[in-house]
Image 1: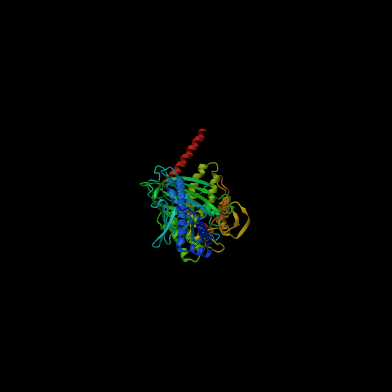
Image 2 (image 1 turned 45 degrees about the horizontal axis):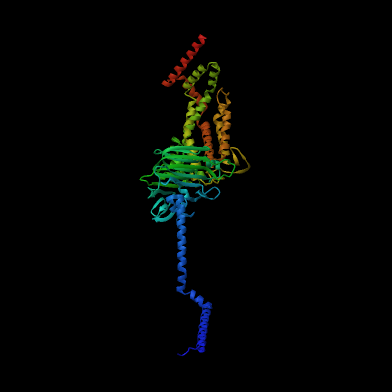
Length: 625
Protein backbone atom coordinates (compact mmCIF):
# COMPACT_ATOMS: atom_id res chain seq x y z
CA UNK A 1 0.00 0.00 0.00
CA UNK A 2 1.27 3.33 -1.03
CA UNK A 3 1.69 5.91 1.80
CA UNK A 4 -0.01 9.30 1.34
CA UNK A 5 2.11 12.39 1.37
CA UNK A 6 1.35 16.07 2.08
CA UNK A 7 0.80 17.89 -1.26
CA UNK A 8 2.31 21.39 -1.01
CA UNK A 9 1.06 22.43 -4.39
CA UNK A 10 -2.55 21.69 -3.44
CA UNK A 11 -2.19 23.82 -0.34
CA UNK A 12 -0.83 26.74 -2.33
CA UNK A 13 -3.73 26.38 -4.80
CA UNK A 14 -6.36 26.50 -2.04
CA UNK A 15 -4.71 29.62 -0.53
CA UNK A 16 -4.67 31.40 -3.88
CA UNK A 17 -8.30 30.51 -4.58
CA UNK A 18 -9.34 31.80 -1.11
CA UNK A 19 -7.43 35.04 -1.63
CA UNK A 20 -9.12 35.61 -4.98
CA UNK A 21 -12.55 35.03 -3.44
CA UNK A 22 -11.82 37.47 -0.59
CA UNK A 23 -10.62 40.12 -3.05
CA UNK A 24 -13.70 39.76 -5.20
CA UNK A 25 -16.02 40.10 -2.22
CA UNK A 26 -14.21 43.22 -1.02
CA UNK A 27 -14.31 44.81 -4.48
CA UNK A 28 -18.04 44.26 -4.96
CA UNK A 29 -18.88 45.68 -1.52
CA UNK A 30 -16.97 48.91 -2.18
CA UNK A 31 -18.64 49.47 -5.54
CA UNK A 32 -22.15 49.24 -4.01
CA UNK A 33 -21.37 51.77 -1.26
CA UNK A 34 -19.86 54.39 -3.57
CA UNK A 35 -22.78 55.48 -5.82
CA UNK A 36 -22.74 58.40 -8.22
CA UNK A 37 -24.98 61.25 -6.89
CA UNK A 38 -26.28 62.03 -10.33
CA UNK A 39 -27.38 58.43 -10.79
CA UNK A 40 -29.14 58.58 -7.39
CA UNK A 41 -31.04 61.74 -8.35
CA UNK A 42 -32.12 60.29 -11.67
CA UNK A 43 -33.29 57.21 -9.92
CA UNK A 44 -35.45 59.20 -7.40
CA UNK A 45 -37.09 61.27 -10.14
CA UNK A 46 -38.29 58.34 -12.19
CA UNK A 47 -42.11 57.96 -12.17
CA UNK A 48 -41.91 54.53 -10.68
CA UNK A 49 -39.76 55.71 -7.77
CA UNK A 50 -41.89 58.84 -7.24
CA UNK A 51 -45.19 56.95 -7.04
CA UNK A 52 -43.71 54.28 -4.83
CA UNK A 53 -42.60 56.94 -2.31
CA UNK A 54 -45.79 59.18 -2.25
CA UNK A 55 -48.65 56.68 -2.11
CA UNK A 56 -47.92 55.72 1.46
CA UNK A 57 -47.73 59.45 2.48
CA UNK A 58 -51.18 60.25 0.98
CA UNK A 59 -52.68 57.27 2.67
CA UNK A 60 -51.13 58.37 5.93
CA UNK A 61 -52.52 61.97 5.56
CA UNK A 62 -56.00 60.72 4.69
CA UNK A 63 -55.86 58.38 7.62
CA UNK A 64 -54.79 61.23 9.94
CA UNK A 65 -57.54 63.55 8.54
CA UNK A 66 -60.13 60.83 8.96
CA UNK A 67 -59.00 60.28 12.51
CA UNK A 68 -59.13 64.05 13.19
CA UNK A 69 -62.65 64.42 11.67
CA UNK A 70 -63.85 61.44 13.61
CA UNK A 71 -62.43 62.90 16.81
CA UNK A 72 -63.96 66.36 16.12
CA UNK A 73 -67.32 64.81 15.26
CA UNK A 74 -67.22 62.69 18.40
CA UNK A 75 -66.41 65.74 20.51
CA UNK A 76 -69.14 67.82 18.81
CA UNK A 77 -71.70 65.07 19.31
CA UNK A 78 -70.70 64.85 22.94
CA UNK A 79 -71.48 68.54 23.38
CA UNK A 80 -74.38 69.00 20.93
CA UNK A 81 -75.84 65.55 20.43
CA UNK A 82 -77.27 65.06 16.94
CA UNK A 83 -76.51 68.70 16.04
CA UNK A 84 -72.80 67.98 16.46
CA UNK A 85 -72.92 66.99 12.80
CA UNK A 86 -73.32 70.65 11.77
CA UNK A 87 -70.27 71.63 13.82
CA UNK A 88 -68.12 69.16 11.88
CA UNK A 89 -68.98 70.58 8.43
CA UNK A 90 -66.75 73.02 6.51
CA UNK A 91 -69.49 75.67 6.92
CA UNK A 92 -68.89 75.80 10.70
CA UNK A 93 -67.23 79.22 10.42
CA UNK A 94 -68.07 82.88 10.98
CA UNK A 95 -68.47 83.43 7.23
CA UNK A 96 -71.39 85.48 5.88
CA UNK A 97 -73.51 85.32 2.74
CA UNK A 98 -74.46 88.63 1.08
CA UNK A 99 -77.64 89.26 -0.90
CA UNK A 100 -79.04 92.58 -2.14
CA UNK A 101 -81.59 94.36 -4.32
CA UNK A 102 -82.21 98.02 -5.19
CA UNK A 103 -83.20 98.90 -1.60
CA UNK A 104 -81.53 96.43 0.76
CA UNK A 105 -78.19 94.79 1.36
CA UNK A 106 -78.28 91.86 3.79
CA UNK A 107 -75.49 89.74 5.25
CA UNK A 108 -76.43 86.42 6.83
CA UNK A 109 -73.98 84.72 9.18
CA UNK A 110 -73.33 80.98 9.14
CA UNK A 111 -73.31 81.08 12.93
CA UNK A 112 -76.93 81.42 13.97
CA UNK A 113 -78.22 81.61 10.39
CA UNK A 114 -79.58 85.13 11.08
CA UNK A 115 -79.01 88.50 9.42
CA UNK A 116 -75.85 90.04 10.85
CA UNK A 117 -76.07 93.22 8.78
CA UNK A 118 -79.01 95.07 7.17
CA UNK A 119 -78.27 98.28 5.27
CA UNK A 120 -80.76 100.55 3.50
CA UNK A 121 -78.87 101.52 0.37
CA UNK A 122 -80.82 104.71 -0.45
CA UNK A 123 -80.68 106.52 2.91
CA UNK A 124 -78.13 108.28 5.09
CA UNK A 125 -78.17 109.32 8.74
CA UNK A 126 -78.06 112.95 9.86
CA UNK A 127 -74.24 112.81 9.72
CA UNK A 128 -74.11 111.21 6.24
CA UNK A 129 -73.45 107.62 7.40
CA UNK A 130 -75.35 104.79 5.67
CA UNK A 131 -78.47 103.73 7.54
CA UNK A 132 -77.93 100.36 9.18
CA UNK A 133 -80.76 98.67 11.04
CA UNK A 134 -78.52 95.73 11.96
CA UNK A 135 -74.78 95.95 12.42
CA UNK A 136 -72.00 94.98 14.84
CA UNK A 137 -74.13 92.65 16.93
CA UNK A 138 -76.95 95.06 17.82
CA UNK A 139 -79.55 92.40 16.93
CA UNK A 140 -80.02 88.69 17.57
CA UNK A 141 -82.44 85.99 16.49
CA UNK A 142 -82.50 82.69 18.35
CA UNK A 143 -84.60 79.55 18.73
CA UNK A 144 -84.21 77.86 22.10
CA UNK A 145 -85.18 74.17 22.17
CA UNK A 146 -84.59 70.91 24.02
CA UNK A 147 -83.53 67.65 22.33
CA UNK A 148 -84.80 64.17 23.13
CA UNK A 149 -81.48 63.36 24.81
CA UNK A 150 -81.97 66.20 27.29
CA UNK A 151 -79.78 68.93 25.79
CA UNK A 152 -80.98 72.56 25.73
CA UNK A 153 -79.57 74.36 22.69
CA UNK A 154 -79.68 77.82 21.08
CA UNK A 155 -79.51 78.24 17.33
CA UNK A 156 -77.53 81.46 17.71
CA UNK A 157 -74.58 79.31 18.87
CA UNK A 158 -74.88 76.68 16.12
CA UNK A 159 -73.58 76.69 12.55
CA UNK A 160 -75.83 76.68 9.50
CA UNK A 161 -74.81 75.63 6.01
CA UNK A 162 -75.67 78.27 3.37
CA UNK A 163 -76.96 77.65 -0.14
CA UNK A 164 -77.68 80.48 -2.61
CA UNK A 165 -80.04 80.00 -5.55
CA UNK A 166 -82.22 82.16 -7.80
CA UNK A 167 -85.79 81.81 -8.98
CA UNK A 168 -86.36 84.33 -11.74
CA UNK A 169 -85.37 87.70 -10.26
CA UNK A 170 -85.77 86.42 -6.68
CA UNK A 171 -82.65 85.62 -4.68
CA UNK A 172 -82.97 82.71 -2.27
CA UNK A 173 -80.70 81.88 0.65
CA UNK A 174 -81.23 78.58 2.44
CA UNK A 175 -79.52 78.24 5.82
CA UNK A 176 -79.61 74.66 7.12
CA UNK A 177 -78.72 73.49 10.60
CA UNK A 178 -78.04 69.81 9.93
CA UNK A 179 -78.10 66.64 11.99
CA UNK A 180 -77.38 64.62 8.84
CA UNK A 181 -77.25 65.28 5.12
CA UNK A 182 -81.04 65.06 4.76
CA UNK A 183 -82.21 66.05 8.27
CA UNK A 184 -82.08 69.70 9.27
CA UNK A 185 -83.65 72.91 10.59
CA UNK A 186 -83.89 75.47 7.76
CA UNK A 187 -84.15 79.27 7.62
CA UNK A 188 -85.17 80.28 4.10
CA UNK A 189 -84.85 83.89 2.92
CA UNK A 190 -86.33 85.12 -0.39
CA UNK A 191 -85.39 88.67 -1.44
CA UNK A 192 -87.44 90.13 -4.28
CA UNK A 193 -86.42 93.05 -6.51
CA UNK A 194 -87.71 96.48 -5.51
CA UNK A 195 -88.95 95.30 -2.09
CA UNK A 196 -88.16 96.09 1.53
CA UNK A 197 -90.12 92.97 2.50
CA UNK A 198 -88.55 89.53 2.18
CA UNK A 199 -90.12 86.13 2.62
CA UNK A 200 -88.84 84.14 5.57
CA UNK A 201 -89.72 80.62 6.63
CA UNK A 202 -88.69 78.25 9.40
CA UNK A 203 -89.12 74.54 8.77
CA UNK A 204 -87.59 71.30 9.91
CA UNK A 205 -87.12 67.97 8.15
CA UNK A 206 -86.50 64.67 9.91
CA UNK A 207 -86.25 66.22 13.39
CA UNK A 208 -89.34 64.58 14.87
CA UNK A 209 -87.06 62.19 16.73
CA UNK A 210 -84.59 64.90 17.72
CA UNK A 211 -86.74 67.76 19.10
CA UNK A 212 -88.40 67.21 22.47
CA UNK A 213 -92.08 67.99 21.88
CA UNK A 214 -92.86 68.04 25.60
CA UNK A 215 -90.71 71.13 26.19
CA UNK A 216 -91.31 74.71 25.00
CA UNK A 217 -89.63 75.94 21.84
CA UNK A 218 -89.15 79.72 22.08
CA UNK A 219 -88.15 82.13 19.35
CA UNK A 220 -86.37 85.21 20.70
CA UNK A 221 -85.79 88.37 18.68
CA UNK A 222 -83.85 91.30 20.12
CA UNK A 223 -82.69 94.62 18.65
CA UNK A 224 -81.00 97.76 19.95
CA UNK A 225 -82.11 100.69 17.79
CA UNK A 226 -79.34 102.80 16.30
CA UNK A 227 -79.59 106.56 16.48
CA UNK A 228 -80.29 108.03 13.04
CA UNK A 229 -81.47 111.61 13.74
CA UNK A 230 -79.87 114.82 14.93
CA UNK A 231 -82.01 115.09 18.07
CA UNK A 232 -81.74 111.92 20.15
CA UNK A 233 -84.59 113.03 22.45
CA UNK A 234 -86.95 113.73 19.55
CA UNK A 235 -86.11 110.45 17.78
CA UNK A 236 -86.47 108.51 21.03
CA UNK A 237 -89.93 110.00 21.60
CA UNK A 238 -91.15 108.26 18.44
CA UNK A 239 -89.22 105.01 18.91
CA UNK A 240 -91.60 102.24 20.02
CA UNK A 241 -92.31 98.53 20.00
CA UNK A 242 -95.66 97.87 18.30
CA UNK A 243 -97.40 94.53 17.97
CA UNK A 244 -100.68 93.29 16.53
CA UNK A 245 -102.82 90.77 18.39
CA UNK A 246 -106.32 89.23 18.38
CA UNK A 247 -107.23 89.79 14.73
CA UNK A 248 -106.26 93.39 14.12
CA UNK A 249 -105.85 95.01 17.54
CA UNK A 250 -102.56 96.74 18.14
CA UNK A 251 -100.66 97.97 21.15
CA UNK A 252 -97.31 99.55 21.82
CA UNK A 253 -94.73 100.12 24.52
CA UNK A 254 -91.63 102.22 24.69
CA UNK A 255 -92.60 105.49 26.37
CA UNK A 256 -91.18 104.52 29.78
CA UNK A 257 -87.80 103.61 31.20
CA UNK A 258 -88.64 99.90 31.25
CA UNK A 259 -91.86 98.30 30.06
CA UNK A 260 -93.03 94.70 29.77
CA UNK A 261 -96.27 93.33 28.29
CA UNK A 262 -97.81 90.03 27.25
CA UNK A 263 -100.63 89.25 24.81
CA UNK A 264 -102.09 86.40 22.77
CA UNK A 265 -102.52 85.59 19.06
CA UNK A 266 -99.64 87.75 17.83
CA UNK A 267 -99.53 88.40 14.06
CA UNK A 268 -96.67 90.90 13.81
CA UNK A 269 -94.01 92.62 15.92
CA UNK A 270 -92.46 95.94 14.88
CA UNK A 271 -89.36 97.56 16.31
CA UNK A 272 -89.90 101.16 15.14
CA UNK A 273 -86.96 103.57 15.21
CA UNK A 274 -88.97 106.70 14.31
CA UNK A 275 -88.37 106.84 10.55
CA UNK A 276 -87.11 103.25 10.09
CA UNK A 277 -88.60 99.96 11.23
CA UNK A 278 -87.75 96.26 11.54
CA UNK A 279 -90.91 94.14 11.42
CA UNK A 280 -91.53 90.40 11.75
CA UNK A 281 -94.86 89.14 10.36
CA UNK A 282 -96.32 85.64 10.47
CA UNK A 283 -99.04 83.85 8.50
CA UNK A 284 -99.66 81.55 11.49
CA UNK A 285 -100.33 83.68 14.61
CA UNK A 286 -98.14 82.97 17.62
CA UNK A 287 -100.25 81.74 20.52
CA UNK A 288 -98.74 84.35 22.82
CA UNK A 289 -95.96 86.87 23.05
CA UNK A 290 -93.86 88.60 25.68
CA UNK A 291 -92.44 92.03 24.85
CA UNK A 292 -89.85 94.20 26.59
CA UNK A 293 -88.74 97.77 25.91
CA UNK A 294 -85.82 99.42 27.69
CA UNK A 295 -84.78 103.04 27.25
CA UNK A 296 -81.02 103.31 26.64
CA UNK A 297 -80.81 107.12 26.64
CA UNK A 298 -79.52 107.93 30.11
CA UNK A 299 -78.41 111.48 29.39
CA UNK A 300 -79.56 113.45 26.34
CA UNK A 301 -76.43 115.62 26.52
CA UNK A 302 -74.25 112.58 25.69
CA UNK A 303 -73.76 111.53 22.07
CA UNK A 304 -75.71 108.28 22.48
CA UNK A 305 -75.32 105.44 19.96
CA UNK A 306 -78.58 103.57 20.75
CA UNK A 307 -82.11 104.72 21.54
CA UNK A 308 -84.02 101.72 22.93
CA UNK A 309 -83.50 98.00 23.45
CA UNK A 310 -86.43 95.87 22.25
CA UNK A 311 -87.03 92.17 22.83
CA UNK A 312 -89.80 89.75 21.82
CA UNK A 313 -90.28 86.15 22.93
CA UNK A 314 -92.65 84.06 20.81
CA UNK A 315 -93.39 80.32 21.18
CA UNK A 316 -93.17 77.91 18.23
CA UNK A 317 -95.40 74.85 18.03
CA UNK A 318 -94.53 71.49 16.52
CA UNK A 319 -96.91 69.82 14.08
CA UNK A 320 -96.22 66.15 13.60
CA UNK A 321 -92.95 66.65 15.41
CA UNK A 322 -91.77 69.28 12.88
CA UNK A 323 -91.64 73.07 12.61
CA UNK A 324 -93.31 74.87 9.71
CA UNK A 325 -93.82 78.66 9.80
CA UNK A 326 -94.18 81.06 6.89
CA UNK A 327 -93.22 84.61 7.83
CA UNK A 328 -91.85 87.88 6.48
CA UNK A 329 -89.18 90.36 7.48
CA UNK A 330 -89.53 94.08 6.71
CA UNK A 331 -86.47 96.30 6.91
CA UNK A 332 -87.25 99.76 5.60
CA UNK A 333 -88.65 103.27 6.13
CA UNK A 334 -91.61 103.97 8.39
CA UNK A 335 -93.44 105.45 5.42
CA UNK A 336 -97.25 105.31 5.58
CA UNK A 337 -97.68 104.74 1.85
CA UNK A 338 -95.15 101.90 1.64
CA UNK A 339 -96.49 100.13 4.73
CA UNK A 340 -100.13 100.63 3.79
CA UNK A 341 -99.58 99.14 0.32
CA UNK A 342 -98.72 95.76 1.86
CA UNK A 343 -102.30 95.52 3.15
CA UNK A 344 -101.15 93.84 6.38
CA UNK A 345 -102.38 96.53 8.81
CA UNK A 346 -98.81 97.88 8.98
CA UNK A 347 -100.06 101.46 8.69
CA UNK A 348 -100.69 101.23 12.45
CA UNK A 349 -96.92 101.38 12.91
CA UNK A 350 -97.09 105.03 11.83
CA UNK A 351 -98.40 107.08 14.81
CA UNK A 352 -101.16 109.10 13.16
CA UNK A 353 -103.36 109.32 16.26
CA UNK A 354 -106.29 107.27 17.50
CA UNK A 355 -109.93 107.48 16.48
CA UNK A 356 -111.02 110.55 14.55
CA UNK A 357 -107.49 112.01 14.57
CA UNK A 358 -106.12 109.04 12.65
CA UNK A 359 -109.05 109.14 10.21
CA UNK A 360 -108.41 112.81 9.46
CA UNK A 361 -104.75 112.08 8.76
CA UNK A 362 -105.35 108.97 6.65
CA UNK A 363 -108.14 110.29 4.47
CA UNK A 364 -107.46 114.04 4.37
CA UNK A 365 -104.00 115.26 5.24
CA UNK A 366 -101.84 112.41 3.90
CA UNK A 367 -103.38 112.37 0.39
CA UNK A 368 -103.64 116.18 0.29
CA UNK A 369 -100.02 116.69 1.35
CA UNK A 370 -98.87 114.04 -1.14
CA UNK A 371 -100.66 115.98 -3.89
CA UNK A 372 -99.17 119.33 -2.84
CA UNK A 373 -95.63 117.97 -2.48
CA UNK A 374 -95.95 116.44 -5.94
CA UNK A 375 -96.85 119.72 -7.69
CA UNK A 376 -94.99 122.30 -5.59
CA UNK A 377 -91.22 122.84 -5.77
CA UNK A 378 -90.56 122.58 -2.02
CA UNK A 379 -91.89 120.64 0.94
CA UNK A 380 -91.75 123.81 3.01
CA UNK A 381 -94.03 125.59 0.52
CA UNK A 382 -96.33 122.52 0.59
CA UNK A 383 -96.61 122.90 4.39
CA UNK A 384 -97.46 126.60 4.07
CA UNK A 385 -100.06 126.01 1.34
CA UNK A 386 -101.69 123.18 3.28
CA UNK A 387 -101.81 125.34 6.42
CA UNK A 388 -103.45 128.20 4.47
CA UNK A 389 -106.09 125.85 3.05
CA UNK A 390 -106.82 124.40 6.50
CA UNK A 391 -107.20 127.85 8.07
CA UNK A 392 -109.50 129.03 5.26
CA UNK A 393 -111.68 125.93 5.68
CA UNK A 394 -111.86 126.57 9.43
CA UNK A 395 -112.45 130.32 9.07
CA UNK A 396 -116.25 130.03 9.58
CA UNK A 397 -115.54 128.38 12.92
CA UNK A 398 -113.11 131.18 13.75
CA UNK A 399 -115.80 133.71 12.80
CA UNK A 400 -118.34 132.06 15.13
CA UNK A 401 -115.83 132.10 17.96
CA UNK A 402 -114.93 135.76 17.49
CA UNK A 403 -118.60 136.75 17.11
CA UNK A 404 -119.35 135.10 20.44
CA UNK A 405 -116.49 137.02 22.04
CA UNK A 406 -117.85 140.29 20.59
CA UNK A 407 -121.30 139.60 22.03
CA UNK A 408 -119.83 138.86 25.42
CA UNK A 409 -117.86 142.09 25.23
CA UNK A 410 -121.04 144.08 24.50
CA UNK A 411 -122.88 142.39 27.39
CA UNK A 412 -120.01 142.85 29.83
CA UNK A 413 -121.42 146.06 31.48
CA UNK A 414 -124.80 144.42 32.12
CA UNK A 415 -123.14 141.28 33.48
CA UNK A 416 -121.07 143.44 35.83
CA UNK A 417 -124.28 145.11 37.08
CA UNK A 418 -125.85 141.70 37.80
CA UNK A 419 -122.69 140.58 39.61
CA UNK A 420 -122.73 143.70 41.77
CA UNK A 421 -126.49 143.55 42.47
CA UNK A 422 -126.49 139.90 43.53
CA UNK A 423 -122.97 139.60 44.87
CA UNK A 424 -124.26 137.98 48.07
CA UNK A 425 -126.59 135.53 46.28
CA UNK A 426 -124.70 133.28 43.91
CA UNK A 427 -127.82 131.34 42.88
CA UNK A 428 -129.78 134.45 41.96
CA UNK A 429 -126.77 135.89 40.16
CA UNK A 430 -126.54 132.76 38.05
CA UNK A 431 -130.25 132.84 37.23
CA UNK A 432 -130.19 136.46 36.10
CA UNK A 433 -127.03 135.96 34.06
CA UNK A 434 -128.62 133.04 32.23
CA UNK A 435 -131.76 135.10 31.55
CA UNK A 436 -129.63 137.85 30.07
CA UNK A 437 -127.77 135.39 27.84
CA UNK A 438 -131.07 133.84 26.74
CA UNK A 439 -132.69 137.19 25.83
CA UNK A 440 -129.60 138.51 24.07
CA UNK A 441 -128.99 135.30 22.11
CA UNK A 442 -125.47 134.96 23.49
CA UNK A 443 -123.65 132.30 25.49
CA UNK A 444 -120.10 131.74 26.72
CA UNK A 445 -120.37 128.19 25.36
CA UNK A 446 -120.93 129.49 21.85
CA UNK A 447 -117.34 130.70 21.90
CA UNK A 448 -115.95 127.47 23.36
CA UNK A 449 -117.69 125.07 21.00
CA UNK A 450 -116.04 126.42 17.81
CA UNK A 451 -112.68 126.17 19.52
CA UNK A 452 -113.41 122.57 20.52
CA UNK A 453 -114.36 121.77 16.94
CA UNK A 454 -110.87 122.75 15.80
CA UNK A 455 -109.08 120.48 18.28
CA UNK A 456 -109.31 117.27 16.15
CA UNK A 457 -107.75 119.11 13.22
CA UNK A 458 -104.95 120.65 15.29
CA UNK A 459 -104.15 117.36 17.05
CA UNK A 460 -104.22 115.41 13.77
CA UNK A 461 -101.69 117.82 12.26
CA UNK A 462 -99.61 117.60 15.46
CA UNK A 463 -99.38 113.85 14.82
CA UNK A 464 -98.98 114.16 11.05
CA UNK A 465 -95.83 116.28 10.75
CA UNK A 466 -93.55 114.24 13.07
CA UNK A 467 -94.63 111.08 11.20
CA UNK A 468 -94.28 112.41 7.65
CA UNK A 469 -91.34 110.45 6.23
CA UNK A 470 -91.37 112.68 3.14
CA UNK A 471 -90.01 115.58 5.24
CA UNK A 472 -86.89 113.67 6.26
CA UNK A 473 -83.75 115.55 5.15
CA UNK A 474 -85.80 118.00 3.06
CA UNK A 475 -84.66 121.58 3.56
CA UNK A 476 -86.50 124.91 3.53
CA UNK A 477 -85.04 128.39 4.04
CA UNK A 478 -82.49 128.09 6.87
CA UNK A 479 -83.71 124.65 7.97
CA UNK A 480 -81.70 121.84 6.38
CA UNK A 481 -84.09 119.10 7.58
CA UNK A 482 -87.81 119.69 8.14
CA UNK A 483 -88.06 116.45 10.13
CA UNK A 484 -85.56 117.76 12.70
CA UNK A 485 -84.89 121.06 14.46
CA UNK A 486 -83.45 124.06 12.64
CA UNK A 487 -80.38 125.81 14.04
CA UNK A 488 -79.41 129.45 13.81
CA UNK A 489 -76.96 129.41 16.74
CA UNK A 490 -75.04 126.83 18.77
CA UNK A 491 -74.82 127.34 22.52
CA UNK A 492 -71.64 126.51 24.49
CA UNK A 493 -73.78 125.00 27.25
CA UNK A 494 -76.92 122.89 27.63
CA UNK A 495 -80.20 124.32 28.95
CA UNK A 496 -82.63 121.78 30.49
CA UNK A 497 -85.75 121.24 28.33
CA UNK A 498 -84.26 123.57 25.71
CA UNK A 499 -81.00 122.13 24.43
CA UNK A 500 -77.66 123.45 23.27
CA UNK A 501 -78.88 125.32 20.20
CA UNK A 502 -81.32 128.05 19.16
CA UNK A 503 -84.07 127.25 16.63
CA UNK A 504 -85.73 130.14 14.81
CA UNK A 505 -89.04 128.56 13.78
CA UNK A 506 -90.14 127.94 17.41
CA UNK A 507 -89.29 131.56 18.23
CA UNK A 508 -91.44 132.83 15.36
CA UNK A 509 -94.26 130.46 16.35
CA UNK A 510 -94.07 131.65 19.97
CA UNK A 511 -94.35 135.30 18.90
CA UNK A 512 -97.36 134.49 16.73
CA UNK A 513 -99.05 132.60 19.57
CA UNK A 514 -98.41 135.49 21.97
CA UNK A 515 -100.04 137.98 19.58
CA UNK A 516 -102.98 135.62 19.06
CA UNK A 517 -103.42 135.22 22.84
CA UNK A 518 -103.34 138.98 23.27
CA UNK A 519 -106.14 139.35 20.73
CA UNK A 520 -108.35 136.61 22.18
CA UNK A 521 -107.76 137.09 25.92
CA UNK A 522 -106.92 140.79 26.05
CA UNK A 523 -110.53 141.84 26.60
CA UNK A 524 -110.97 139.35 29.40
CA UNK A 525 -107.83 140.53 31.09
CA UNK A 526 -109.10 144.12 31.15
CA UNK A 527 -111.89 143.02 33.46
CA UNK A 528 -111.44 142.30 37.12
CA UNK A 529 -110.22 138.77 37.76
CA UNK A 530 -113.15 136.62 38.89
CA UNK A 531 -112.63 134.55 42.04
CA UNK A 532 -111.87 130.93 41.24
CA UNK A 533 -111.15 131.68 37.58
CA UNK A 534 -107.70 130.87 36.12
CA UNK A 535 -105.23 133.70 35.76
CA UNK A 536 -105.61 134.59 32.07
CA UNK A 537 -102.46 136.66 32.05
CA UNK A 538 -100.46 133.68 33.28
CA UNK A 539 -102.00 131.45 30.59
CA UNK A 540 -101.24 134.06 27.93
CA UNK A 541 -97.54 133.96 28.77
CA UNK A 542 -97.37 130.22 29.48
CA UNK A 543 -98.39 129.01 25.99
CA UNK A 544 -95.68 130.90 24.07
CA UNK A 545 -93.05 129.87 26.61
CA UNK A 546 -94.00 126.22 26.24
CA UNK A 547 -93.75 126.54 22.48
CA UNK A 548 -90.37 128.25 22.79
CA UNK A 549 -88.83 125.63 25.07
CA UNK A 550 -90.36 122.31 24.15
CA UNK A 551 -90.46 122.86 20.40
CA UNK A 552 -86.81 123.83 20.22
CA UNK A 553 -85.97 120.15 19.64
CA UNK A 554 -89.09 119.29 17.61
CA UNK A 555 -89.26 119.00 13.85
CA UNK A 556 -88.92 122.37 12.18
CA UNK A 557 -91.77 121.39 9.83
CA UNK A 558 -94.13 121.28 12.84
CA UNK A 559 -92.94 124.68 14.09
CA UNK A 560 -93.34 126.08 10.57
CA UNK A 561 -96.93 124.85 10.55
CA UNK A 562 -97.74 126.48 13.92
CA UNK A 563 -96.10 129.75 12.91
CA UNK A 564 -97.98 129.87 9.61
CA UNK A 565 -101.26 128.77 11.20
CA UNK A 566 -101.21 131.42 13.93
CA UNK A 567 -100.09 134.08 11.49
CA UNK A 568 -103.04 133.30 9.20
CA UNK A 569 -105.44 133.15 12.17
CA UNK A 570 -104.30 136.60 13.28
CA UNK A 571 -104.95 137.93 9.79
CA UNK A 572 -108.42 136.34 9.65
CA UNK A 573 -109.34 137.74 13.07
CA UNK A 574 -108.22 141.25 12.05
CA UNK A 575 -110.40 141.04 8.94
CA UNK A 576 -113.36 139.81 11.02
CA UNK A 577 -112.86 142.51 13.62
CA UNK A 578 -112.37 145.55 11.38
CA UNK A 579 -114.22 144.54 8.21
CA UNK A 580 -116.94 142.00 9.00
CA UNK A 581 -118.06 142.59 12.59
CA UNK A 582 -119.51 145.93 13.78
CA UNK A 583 -119.85 145.99 17.59
CA UNK A 584 -122.44 148.78 17.49
CA UNK A 585 -124.66 146.70 15.21
CA UNK A 586 -124.17 143.72 17.49
CA UNK A 587 -125.25 145.81 20.51
CA UNK A 588 -128.34 147.06 18.70
CA UNK A 589 -129.29 143.56 17.66
CA UNK A 590 -128.89 142.30 21.22
CA UNK A 591 -131.22 145.00 22.47
CA UNK A 592 -133.80 143.99 19.90
CA UNK A 593 -133.48 140.35 20.89
CA UNK A 594 -134.04 141.27 24.53
CA UNK A 595 -137.40 142.88 23.67
CA UNK A 596 -138.64 139.80 21.81
CA UNK A 597 -140.33 137.00 23.76
CA UNK A 598 -137.88 134.16 24.00
CA UNK A 599 -139.13 130.62 23.78
CA UNK A 600 -137.23 128.34 26.04
CA UNK A 601 -136.38 124.82 25.07
CA UNK A 602 -137.19 121.88 27.31
CA UNK A 603 -133.64 121.65 28.62
CA UNK A 604 -133.36 125.38 29.41
CA UNK A 605 -136.82 125.40 31.01
CA UNK A 606 -135.94 122.38 33.12
CA UNK A 607 -132.69 123.97 34.23
CA UNK A 608 -134.50 127.18 35.21
CA UNK A 609 -137.10 125.22 37.19
CA UNK A 610 -134.38 123.34 39.03
CA UNK A 611 -132.60 126.59 39.88
CA UNK A 612 -135.85 128.17 41.11
CA UNK A 613 -136.56 125.15 43.29
CA UNK A 614 -133.06 125.30 44.69
CA UNK A 615 -133.56 129.00 45.42
CA UNK A 616 -136.84 128.32 47.28
CA UNK A 617 -135.26 125.54 49.34
CA UNK A 618 -132.45 127.87 50.29
CA UNK A 619 -134.94 130.53 51.46
CA UNK A 620 -136.86 127.96 53.54
CA UNK A 621 -133.67 126.78 55.20
CA UNK A 622 -132.76 130.38 56.06
CA UNK A 623 -136.24 130.93 57.62
CA UNK A 624 -135.87 127.79 59.76
CA UNK A 625 -132.51 129.00 61.00
